[in-house]
Length: 267
Image (cartoon, rainbow, N blue to C red; front, side):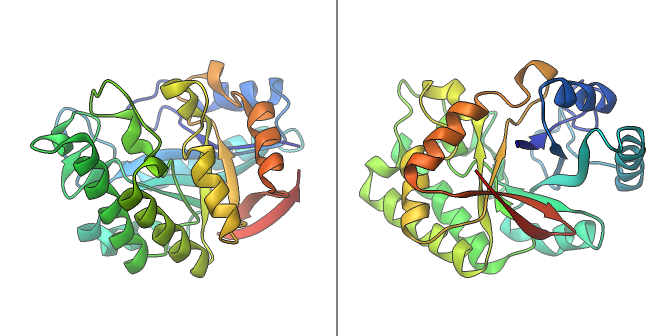
């Protein structure tokens, strides 16, 4: 029994995948349940692209898919919310009473974009990584209107550095990660295991297995798995391998959500 809980349809500005095609591909790949989690990034800094969703149209389209594929595929109303410390009330306003599942992600930090490289200007690699983790920690201390943190170490994907080391290799970074994990566990929130991470080093999802080991050691239980797919070919990518690794770490369950409430499934 598998669930892909990170999927982007044409409602995301960086995806051309029609919602109907997404659902059909999920069924063909043997998935039991999905969450459609399109991007909504308030105050995104790249003016060449806008990650804002018309919520009414979006939810109506998901409801249409739910009816169309009833009995074949469970489809949840999700969103990938870009969170920054200065827009938390705006995030709350958007999310009010509508979603089954919310990924809290950090694509833009302190009004600087990770993708286009603005965030890294004037900083060494580890200085940028530490700055990013401090910003994540600040938000998770102040905010809890999400279910899981998306691709926690996504910073490794960006910056055009020669190598993308595991953040656990640096003592200061590891300490910040430990505190981030402690805070989300305390607030009964969780982590996403994002299999798009294998594109970085071929060995790890996002977050890395070392971070996931620390999460397990600290008592973390809420864990979703998602492919972060923007095209049908990558839906459920490397799920078998990833779940086998999670079981070796000690995890016994994957989590799904309905009305923001977790349900645990034995793996």
